[in-house]
Length: 124
Image: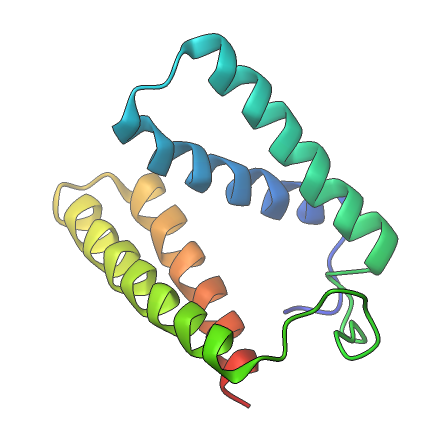
């Protein structure tokens, strides 16, 4: 990630994380009150991670953190899930781009790129 993220840019990235997760959950038609609460908790979760562990700094190091998975089977499973989501986001990007909904297309392209970065890290 860019090592020069400003606080407002970091907040925007976190908001994108939350919005993408919420968009995926829309397919399941959960109660609106539950969804509002969950959205708020997701935002707090990502914000807390960012504040406590400097997630968006170039020096973020998973090696000395508690409960970080280094099990090859679990990493393989996560890589499979990432592949599916990357493909989904790529398809969504193309669909929105073709229908000239460029803001939505850009959001899906950005999320695809983020997942590809995570995938690269896990493949090491």
